[in-house]
Length: 632
Image (cartoon, rainbow, N blue to C red; front, side, top):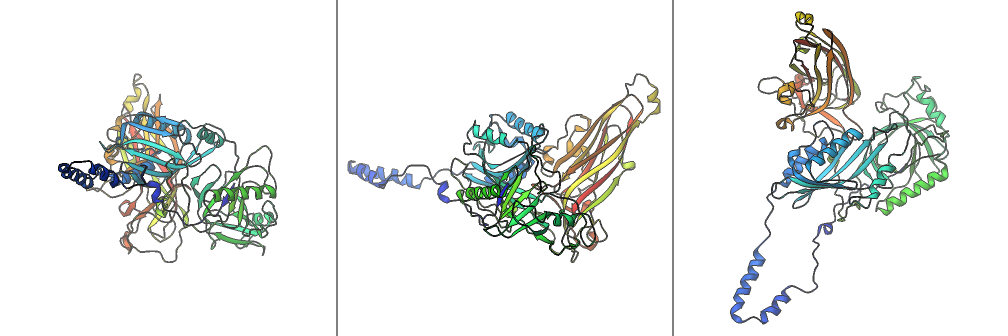
C-alpha cells in the first residue's frame, strides 16, 4: 500500500456549485414587458404596473422546519447506527426512500432491516465526520464505515467512505429519503455494477499478523488510495540501503529482542517501515514501530550507536495497498502511481516515501497475500484538502474541522478550568481492578440491581489519572453466578420441572452522569421499562435514549434439573478503537472531590445491571471481577 503526504489546507465549498439550474437569457427581462407595454391601451398601464409591483415584492415562503434541530439530532443519533441503541425510527417517514449503489428500500421496515443485516454480517464501525444543511429541505452528512465480513474465514475488512443526502418531508419534518454516494466509484445510481465490483475487490484474501499497529482513522477511500490520519507513535530506526531492502533489520530487531541498556525484551509490532525523504530515494532508514504504551522517557537506550529512538508525530497521508514481493522497481512504480492519482484529484503530495511491510523484510511466501503500504511524506495533522467528485451534483466537501473527527486528544466537553492538576505528570496506560460481590448482588427471582465501574482518582499511587479526563480503552469482566432454589422444600417436588430462568448482565453508558433527587442510580425498570419479566432483547425506553445507550448485554438462559447450578461468565469489549475514541471526564471541583466516584463524573459513566428472572422461588448470587484499561 502506498501513502502520500498531502497539503494541509482544506478547500471550502465553491459557491457556484450550489447555484440555480435555471437557464439564463442574455437579454434583460424588462425588454419583454417594454414590448408588451407599447401594444397595451393607456387605461391598462396602471394594471400592468400593479402586477409588476406585486411580483417584485412577493417572496417565496420560508420553510418552517427546524433544520438546525435536525442537524443536532443527526449528530447525536447517527453514531448509534450499528450499536445496541440504534437510530430513532420515529424521526423517519413510514415510506422513507433509501438508495445506495447496490441497495434500495422504500419503507422504514426495509430501511431498518438493512441496518440489522449489516450489523449481523459485518459488525460495522460507523464514524460521522460532519453534518450540514445543503438545501431548504436537505441535510448532507460525511462518514466512514469499516466492516468485517464475519462469514468468511479470513474476515476481510471492507471500508466505505462517502456522503449521505437526507431529504426532509416539509409537511411533518421527518426524513423521507436517504441517498448514499460512495467515494470509491463514479456511478452511484442503483443498481451499480461498479459498486458491486468494489465490494468484491475488498473480499480478497489478505493475511496480516495479529500484532499491535499504529493507530489511524480513514478519512476517505477512493478507487486507488486511502487518505488516513495517523496518531503519533515511536520507532527504533537505523540506516538502510533501499526501500525494498532489509539492511539494518537485524539491528533494529535486536533492540526489541534485548540488545538495549536494560536487556529488556519489547513486544513485537507491525509493520516494518523503510523511509526516504529525498526525491532520489538515496537516504533510506529502516524502522520498527514500538508498542503504543511506550514513551521515549521510559524506553531503554539502544546498545548500538547506529540505532536510535524517534517519535513520529503522525499526520495525514495517502496509502496505496498492494501485495507480493516488493522489489525496488515495483515500489517505485507504486509510488509514481499513487502520486499520479493524487495530482489527478487536485492534491499536492510532498517529497519522500515510506514503505510499510507486514512480514519479515527478508522473505515473502508465495502462497499468501500480504499487504504493503508506501507512505509518501507524512506530516503534521492540520487538515486535508480533497474534493467529493463522486457526487452527481458536483458539490465539494467542506472543511472537516478537528472536532468533526472521533479521534481527539481530549474530551469534547467543558471542564472546570480551576480544577487541580498533577504537575509534570504524563498520561499513561493503566488498569484498574474491581470486584463486585456481596448481599447487593444476591438477587431473588424477578429482581435486579445496579452498580457502576469505579474510575481512578486524580494523583496518588497507581492506578490514577493525571488529567480531568481519561480515555477508556477496554473493559474485561470474569466471574461466576451461583443459582439455587430459595425454598429447600421445593426441591422435593418432582413436578416442579427443574430450575429455570434468565440471568442478564448489561453494561450501559451514561453520557451525562448525575445522581437524581433520590440519590440513587436509575433502576432496571427505569431504564428498560417493563422488560424485567421479558426474555426478549433489552431496549432503552425512548425518554431515556438521549442520556443512556447499551454497550453490552450478556444473557444466559438457565434450564437445569437440579436444585442449584454454577455458571461462568466472561467477556472483553473494546471501548475505543482507531476509528472511535471514548473519553470520560470529571468535575474535580476541589482537591477533596477528585475521586472516581459516580458523583464526580461529568461524562460517560459505565453502569452495570444485574437481573434474574425466574418463575420459581430462587436466588442468583454473582461474583464478578472487572478490569478497566484506560489512558489517564
